[in-house]
Image (cartoon, rainbow, N blue to C red; front, side, top):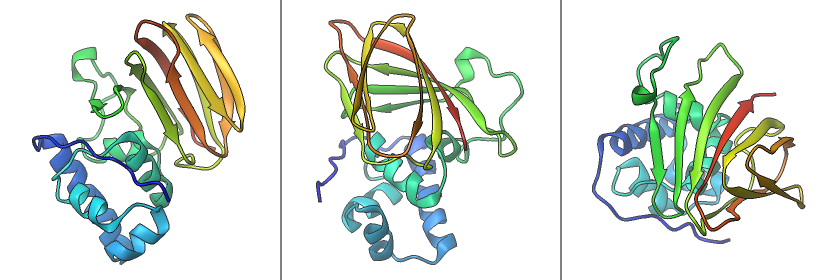
Length: 195
């Protein structure tokens, strides 16, 4: 199985809270690192380093763990923040960066446990290419609206090229891939709806 690469970097407060929450989720299920590694396809050492916040986890790693724990990435990230407010100012929206892939993710509308939809802003640097081997929740509905630049999306072996203003709606059952398709960064809105 393909190994995931992590980015070395200084430990920041978000990574520390995220690592602690990942360790809590594993403990709640009574799993050892070995059991989680088997379920997720991620090495024990990578899982251990992520839980101890020795590394900033990649988007692919978080996606795999979200799949095992049955939650979206926004739900996981919201669990390390305070209860979301009804109104979230732009300056207060949580931003997470996967430095390895050039992906920046802003939780525009942090999820709430009683709601099924969330809105995310994604940015991919020139040349950025992110592949997810499975959705965090099978049957997840996504609406991808390109705001600036060009984006190539592959889902269920179907390839879609989106330019600024284009919107793609799909249900995600298998692997997906997002690739910056232009000579400039791509910025897009992603509406995620739980099945």
